[in-house]
Length: 214
Image: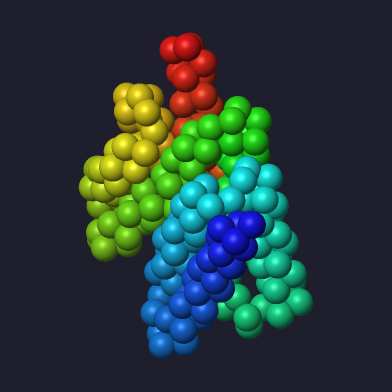
């Protein structure tokens, strides 16, 4: 019970830290897309604490609750999530899609299939790999949008995160799937964005390979 309580406190603290850091940076003139990436990276650490300290359903419920809280803040108190939502079109909701995708991965990978690392590694691809690609892409002149470096950065980070899943080759193929989805962006739907696509693609591939390998 003590570990569970500490874990829940740690997840909540990191969620709050990510939001406050994004707002702090935005207030000091940092570009909104960078602020969102900082919050996403911090959020990945929160999910790691969740899989280490909590059970599947508590973790998924916390992620869903964070999504609902951020949604409520954006709809009623937009200034409180300025670091996450400023500069976005009105129909874009990545700060909601991110924790919902996390909740979905935890529900399916851990709650349904009983493997917490199968649930977490796709979240790590979303939280750390996708943002590595975004940071590199933002540093490249717009006329060089076809540059391979953003995808290279994402793949390197995702391959590192894949170490958490064994056998490693399954995680590595999941990393490749996540990178391909981010690169080619199969959808522009306001909610079915990169976050959902990365998690869904890598989780599906890894779960299928894991089942086939048994």
